[in-house]
Length: 168
Image (cartoon, rainbow, N blue to C red; front, side, top):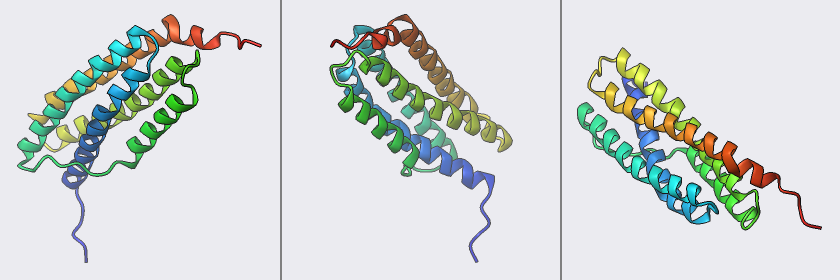
């Protein structure tokens, strides 16, 4: 009979999931920056790439606190979200709607990360992993700030540009 899984196991499993996700996001952000048409979009994706590197380092510290090797576990969800973003880059390349699509894809990623970090913070508290909480909270705060910046960028220019009438 298999051993009973506990919240400790679930925490580690979810930590591996978000670690894998952050690594995938780190690879996707430069592609998104190259695809973005606006300078603000390009700069935002590159800035978040740098933040993502810091988030990965914080996750590695959490693994260290647990006495575990920093190892990811394939995250089908993030792979699907990134694949959708790549599809938008391909299908909307050169169109006025490209940046709005990129922002939408990036927000799907942010919302996934926000959900994961919120859960990990709660579980870390339940498990008495007090030293992990501020590391996870720092990541969550950056993801929430990025989501807000993406919303502002969409409202300020990308969505209006995407509404432009098609030329006949």
